[in-house]
Length: 399
Image (cartoon, rainbow, N blue to C red; front, side):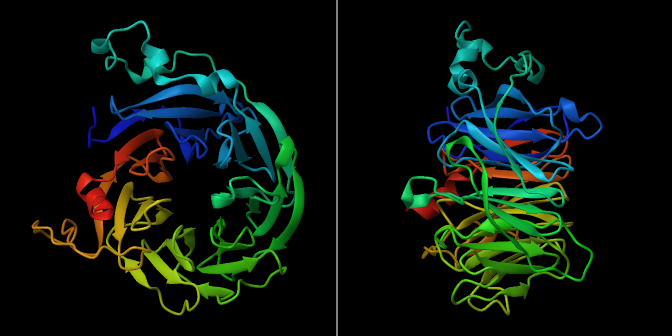
């Protein structure tokens, strides 16, 4: 039965990384990486499943990650059982394969011998009474240099197949490497040093341009954003700028609009979310204020409907924004009869439409790959929460 209420589960461990299984288009599943620094060998990757009928989040498996706490993680866009991790304090990334028996397990398997009335009587502790599974190491990506802080796997989009050079790694000093990970092997194709900044360095983030045919990327460096084109060592995509000042303090995250070229969203330590037209980035297209009272740490477009965007921060907030006027399909009529203050006036074209408060800083965000209207957030305390886009918001976009 469908529910609009959030569903959550507490993993009981410090966690910082959350990604969806992008290649799984039938079930809403997510990977969560632990961040147990004092005991690195005890770290692991939880595979979570959201069941929309029962409105619950459950654990399918815990997968061992004995090489240390997880700093960054991404999943293959074509193979649900393949993921990549970067370990805290290491300059290497690792390509893993999840055991087939874990991938084939389903939510119904947990309850085959139970009636419907007992399905919801399980505590989080009951869900963890399984052995930790081991993952197969497919390849190691020896980037060298400083510690890796981010890994990204390009979505092939309409091409339908992963091509050479679809993986990026970036280290703490801003060195970006492009990798070919086909056939279970890893080969570095090229590398480049991202533009530097003169202020104290915040760990950089990198993102593929989904409209750049695998050639263009954006990278954060302090309060600035740099744009690189792999076809020319450190040049820029045609018609855009090479570097621009985005925030007063450090830029913490960035994401391209999946449907509209040249539009980039950034989050910053100034607690703001900004939107930029990269063809002329002297001033932002839009600034989303009031959603965060401390650092805005993550920002993420809905992969299907670019009117919707998520942000999270160290203030424990998760915000769902509507950014209609700068989307690929602006909403033409917004005639809600609801009245209220700015936080609840959903008749505005650009507005904060929903929010959820965790108990700790929120470092992980992910949209569901199987359902465009589901998203999950992850607090540092290990609490994972599945939420829905409000039905009223969904109908405004679809109708």
